[in-house]
Length: 428
Image (cartoon, rainbow, N blue to C red; front, side, top):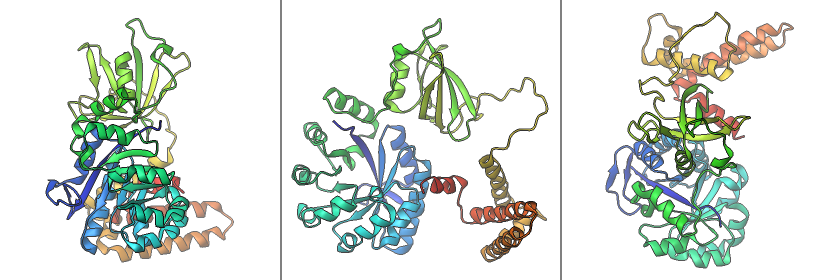
């Protein structure tokens, strides 16, 4: 049986998260905070519905989607307000892994092939309300769609009997026996809607219950059992923890078998506190969770290296890393990590934007506005072309550096981060 996902839904309406597609009662004025809440409580994915009623509300919703994608520790899918291919592009450019076509709108059915060929079948889902729509468009769905979001759970059996395609089931309320029956269907990838949202605090318990009933839920699939590790004299396994983006060492802690299994089950780092002699889910009191990106054992199988996405600070002192007490240091020249250099320069530019400094050329550009920034960017691009015609490669190096600086000013002006750029490049 395939692994099943419990998918939280966020319904965006006028910058707020509301109860459902049919109920605009506000449940959180900060949808990004709500997304983090769902991640903390072990949701496997987040589906964001844009319920905006006009162009400005739509742009506001896209901005919020972008923030959710940047802060969520799970994949995000985007739906709503799709009328043409450009709207799918905007949803995917926020960072959403998939975009949803609403098949109750004929124009969305018509653009299916176009958006699928443009962005890839794996990026496109279709939301469907009735079986007839599926039957009438069966060939196109099979060829150009990676899955169906069924807005009516009662369609599940009929759809799965006529179409071999992953199904996401939108359910507002469902009794446990019906939930088990729905997830037992091989075609069903997962469920979403308020059946998940209303039980967010109990998602870990619900996953355990599903597993007890023979339904596989999302968890880390480890290649090694606890018995494969060589433990220290206390029966513990040391764990070195790194930031998965920067490789900065954050902390060292210890695991016992229970904390190892809890880490695999929740996807969040769990340790055993030797001082308190109890299980320690990192972040449970502080909110500074560590989301697992990878776990790697060393050559002797007696130490674990964990690469994590760290929320907030790793250290109880408030420092990002526990390693800040310099004992001794020789003068040496550090190898420059290219992305770190870009990040450092970009952060200086952001600081200038937030805290203007008299005589700063960066502030001069911000003060003059977007047209001046674009003019300088164009000039620097031309300088690269001219320098490239000369025999000395150093000139190209200098001009590219100037261009990159002005490009980062533009990025800061438009609130685009290096992480967004590198993510987009990696996806190409």
